[in-house]
Length: 435
Image (cartoon, rainbow, N blue to C red; front, side, top):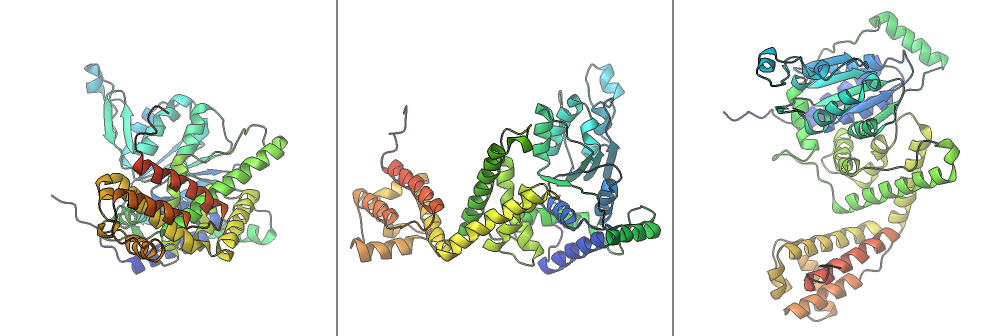
């Protein structure tokens, strides 16, 4: 039987999530940015890590966010060095063990839960953490011969400290959202916290209207571009701009590490993994969605600091915002966004020709289904007088059109160099072999 899809009405869903975020902010004082970040993780079906000193209400925050959803199982555990993987994946099946097979009974385990909260995660031993890696990333239990798909949607982990090892570095990469709680010292904030404690006694509250988990799941599919009915559009020039900002920020972080090694004694460089790079598109969709839009705009890139910095470390946020501001002013003052859009449409056209090289033997005017085709043909008529072409004419046309771009930024100049190589490769496909 085909699974019936949960109805999705964008305006209603947006209002429900905004309302949930506001509710948690009223309940958990002085954690607005972390709350925004964790809801982003939930919408993206990702995981979040919170670091702080003892007694900063990490577990209360996680419990309150999970309480906003109805119909989801929650797995909770406090990690310790003595624990084995069966703490997370269920005890060994005795009958299977009698047959010489090590199999876990996953009932009521993390594998069978949509949400998870792991307190003091770095107290777990490396063997257990290694076992968690696959479940967090691949959404499956894979131990020995046992393979069980996991229902895990999002896990929130908490810790008082960071433990650095090869395993923990890999684990941190699974938690793409990270936050550091700084204890509140302002009298007014402490007064508000005391008020909430007197009212709720340190317990999570159940809202009058909860979000069905099925709605979160469907929304997550829309955010990740997996829903066939609804999509949040990301224009090509926004993708280019976002990548430029992130690369610039990464370079600035590494420059600071080299200039101030005493401030980062254990950090050789700042590295953004391909996994985290890829999640930027999902994060941009979240930002647009929570602003009531189904299309991303360049200004949404500013909020990517939630993904690429540790929320709570002011210096990282300021550096990202400065990186964004520097490139945004450069791109807008030079009117580069329009040029980027034309260039990326041209690049898509080149990719189409790569996949269908036989098209190069036909006139460009006959190639259908490409947004650039009409612009390219009009340019060819005005500039070269070409309306029909041989393969050689097509090569001249593509090379001349590419050279017609006068790059308005360094990023565009770098992109043009790569595009030039791609065009050369179209007409000389074997030159790269053994070189």
